[in-house]
Image (cartoon, rainbow over all chains, first blue to last red):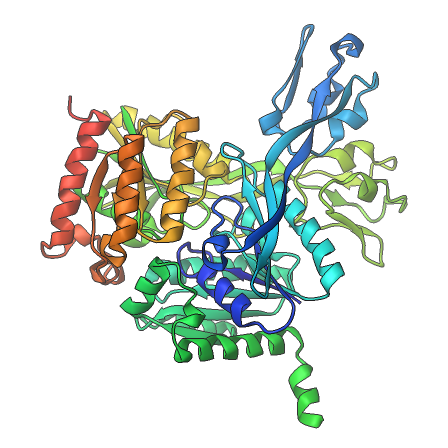
Length: 293
Length: 292
């Protein structure tokens, strides 16, 4: 099972929930950081890194001697990443999405596969929790290509271990966030009951509902703000799986890099209950089968 | 004309609440919300929309089932896994389609349409603090960087037309395409951080991004009292890298109180928080070279 922790608004507690769930999960589990722009999961899980590699994507390189400047490549490119005028051909690798169209369409075979560095993928182990993360190169604009490579490695790791994965997704509701959650089995939306939290939560709900995956809500800083989030969840039939109270002591523990589920038995119980409800949400028949057994 | 952009790296550090307060404190300006993905500034400013525009950018592939002969070449060539056989034939998953046109160009049956993609709306609005240029990308859409460029262009034109010296922008979290777009042409970036491991880590990355694009950076430490040790580490980092620290703001539910009332924190009765913010704004004006 792959559980994606997403939010809409940033800073609502995605990483807190991901690190806590991974820590109390029980059984083979991988904590996966797909917030490749600002990866933070390692700051809480503190894994021993076992390996890493640079990730690249395919961009065109030009063998100008073979180029007849016919312009087929620049005509096809939708991203202004290759340009031909008069007797000049120029590539803009930072604009390239890696579709491979220019290379395939060139009648002279003057274009071949070059590389653009996307960032780094690293993996390791934090106690009983496996770890995998992507880290975008500073200046790289596109995070989805690196996320696709992290997910490819995740598939390999899950095929080898057969365990579960908990994905820490980036904030927002546009392409990076959708890329982070679209291959998961369950989506958990973490929010706070403030006007910003509620508004962005609604956007996230709209963005992720078409994916057709089971979704649940976690309300962090419960007690702060107002009750609009509860009304929205009720209206949409979205289950609230956990509430983490608004408490300065929790904020301070987080600020010191603590994993919240390990701070007190009360907090641990919240996450154990959350874990069990996620498992039920992923397999709707499971609880019924248990009842029949 | 000066452009100031409020960023953070990490989300939820207080960018929008502080941008709202600065919009209140600044004299003549155009306000611009560049977090087109999850915009929140309008919740504080209650804009009255005066202009609404559709945002179309790029295209998306659509397979015409009548013309498709099922050869599957499109699915083989698509680098984004967006074309799949679904039992009834081949279909494009719009969530995965990047609009690269490869399938359209190579389909031997010319069975793939390529309509323009409607990605959202943008607006010019009136608020109690002045004009606001803002947008809403459709949830799940892409091309936020392009929409950021559109908004900046509109804000600049509006500033010019009205003889205003300042464009004040609320940015997006992260260091990817919308943030890179919002830094282009900015005179000063102000990063709002918090004294947590994530806050400091993400500040360091967004600072590296600003260095990469040669944008001047200043820092505000929000919730400084949550972890004084981490606040000290951020101060050392800023000192070593010569980033001015403009303010240290306490962890205060006042910000949420204001938000719930649809106000910015400087509209509430005067507090330590609002006084510190007022000083920060004066320093921002100095650093950005405003009023010279």
